[in-house]
Amino acid sequence: MTDQFDGQDDDGIDGLQQAEPRQRALRKTAPIVPAQNVVGRALIVVIAIMTFLSCVTFGAVTLVRDTASVWENQISTEATIQIKPADGLDMEAALATAAGIASEFPGVKATRIVDRTATARLLEPWLGSGLDIDQLPVPRLIVVTIDETNPPDFDAIRAAFAPKLPTASLDDHRTWVNRLVAMAHTTVTIGVAILALMLSATVMTVVFATRGAMAGNGHIIEVLHFVGAEARFIARQFHKQFLLTGMKGAAIGGVAAVVVFIVFSWWSSRNMATPEGDQAAALFGNFAIGLAGYLGVVMVVVVIGALTAATSHATVISYLSEIDDRQSDIA
Amino acid sequence: MIRFENVGLRYGMGPEILRDISLHIPPRSFQFLSGPSGAGKTTLLRLLFMSLKPTRGLITMFGKDRTRISRTELPLLRRRIGVVFQDFRLLDHMTTYENVALPLRVRGREESSYRTDVVELLKWVGLGERMHVLPPVLSGGEKQRTAIARALIEQPEILLADEPTGNVDPQLARRLLRLFIELNRLGTAVVIATHDLTLMEQVDARRLILANGRLDVYD
Image 1 (cartoon, each protein chain N blue to C red):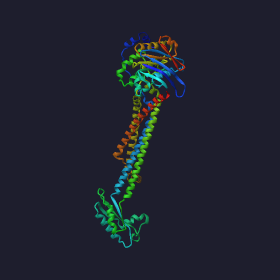
Image 2 (cartoon, each protein chain N blue to C red):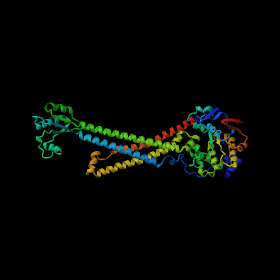
Image 3 (cartoon, one colour):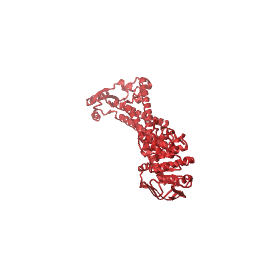
Image 4 (cartoon, rainbow over the protein chains, first blue to last red):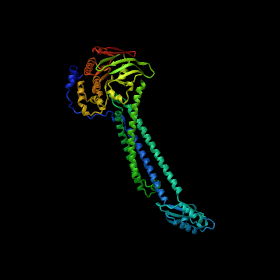
């Protein structure tokens, strides 16, 4: 026993009144729930990985979408008129007529007949060199350059050909473009679905981690309960730590993703003229995700951080309600 | 202040631990709650502290029907009750000072507003020199006094103490008892759950004896 307490045995309340004000400085107040009790490094790593994968998915979707739109634009600047040979058809005259008809339409910038030599070159991979094109019934092509901003009425062009050149057909590449657009949309949809799955997995991970933290700190929650702490106060002690963890993990993952994008972009610019670079560029464009992509990465980081905080808050509140309900159930 | 009328409690489908308990704890009263081990003293204290709901009967806490007290009201009512557990339930990562100040912290008060009060109380219970020490290095008696100080810091209307002298020697037990008497004189109602007859013989106070789930009150 200390002397002070011994003294209090006799003077009790007087002792209380005579107590001296404190002189010593106290250490910084300890957190009610110690950080190391709540979240370990593992959770930060998991959130960082989830964020990284989400950002990479987001970046990949941006890349595919941009590349697809480039393809679409490139193709939509041209259309092709194809004239199939037929008995008694003067191919050269037909080509000139078709080019003449097409060039009269507003929105057609230019027409170019693919000549015999070029046609022979096109067929070379299948039929070999030294081909005499006149001996074979080979369709001939006219390349029509289109004004992108003011495209011509393709149906009207087709209708104009029909009476004079029944074997001519106009391919505006719409089928190909539509397929590309559909593919891009599918890729974006798959990407968004993967992103949603990643975010759901992150939420579930945080739920498990929060519940684990709550269970591991049951003794603290109990003490807080009986000193009259409100559920909101208890929840705040936990979700503060989770917000910090979420932001930390998300920032690490986001930075790692940005680094990966920069490295790939650097690699593709260094290997621009090589076969590997050309292959990659053919598939993914120039590997730059652009400002929108980087903003998206920032958005993913913020969303994951906020999601972590909101999830842990909701989990803590529901856990505390469960405790209350359990007490009621006992009775 | 607290009134029980024909209160019964059972855990799940088990037998009734408490049966037809009727009692009234008036303001500024002092009573011992006694009975053999396993008689239900702690359960009765938990009912008094509203951490359990009765299976049957009526409990009125500070004029409110227990069944009508909402989750949001519960913490506010608990703040009017101080509890000292037999196993202290101190937070090991917090110093004596921080443990005692915890009830004030959860009320959102700034440290500067309560620092002097906490230090004075710690000195009053004889822990002035131990306020920066973590509970694992405190002796049993010091832990007990820390737990008591934490229960008293907000000057509760009623103090519930579960075997407060169970871990200390008779001399310290007597001193702790004097501390409770002093508190009672200051206006706090006190309920001490104990099976220490020697302790009870030292004070002429009301006795609530629990046996076989029933309560007998000796005024």
